[in-house]
Image (cartoon, rainbow, N blue to C red; front, side, top):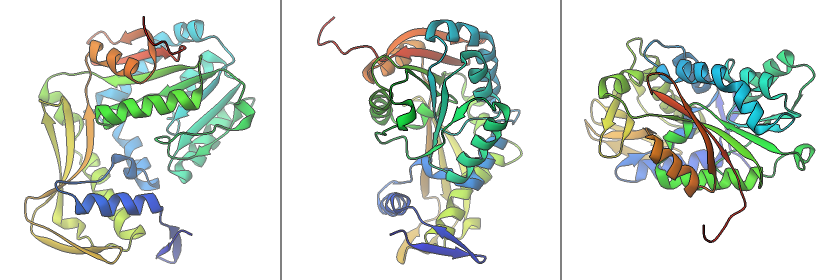
Length: 325
């Protein structure tokens, strides 16, 4: 049974996996917490704000690509598939895909239940004739999709370069999990950010208005609220770093002074300058992306990018596995 945490008279249920990941992450060296735990309701709202920032090019670039290619996606994939989105639908990209593919059903999957229900309600109003089946779950794990769509061909949708948040080993595991969840013959439309100059990359994850910093620091607020934490949030600052060797942006919460705190009745301490690694955003070249997809059991069918080559969308198919060419 989940342990209730109480704040301002409201009861919040602490996810046991959240508790386990946070405690393990604070105990390891270097310290790191999986990025998926950013997305409580406040975190999801802040991320929506991030997507509208001037510095954050991925969302507007991907949206422009999707607007251009949507008819082609519909032609290749065919209409009437069940669109399964890994993550709650955005207010811009998801409607574009739903309009052009005329799906038989839409299944958004998200770990943040409140945000999932709200985004599903909005999409249900925009598409009153569409069967919307919100599914609260961690899509990093194998899923049995709603029986309503069990025998319907699937089109997976994984926009936003979220796959870049995972180290390559985890990204491959996720792609394999998606393949198992969607079934043979399914298709997957996935966004991947591309390698570019360091200044553009760092600015996208450290905006002048401090929205990304608030998004990062909100993780500490969530730990305090849901896990009985006493972390002094003002003792940490947001930092974005480009790791050229691993072709990724890293987000860290850096202690600006030595701190002691408790989480779930366990004591922790960080020295000044020590950080908690909270997110990676890997960037992929075209060949790297295709290798990643194939490693995850997906055969790339088509690749689209913008005129400046900032971002790419890939359509791939879960074809029958073969032991040899």
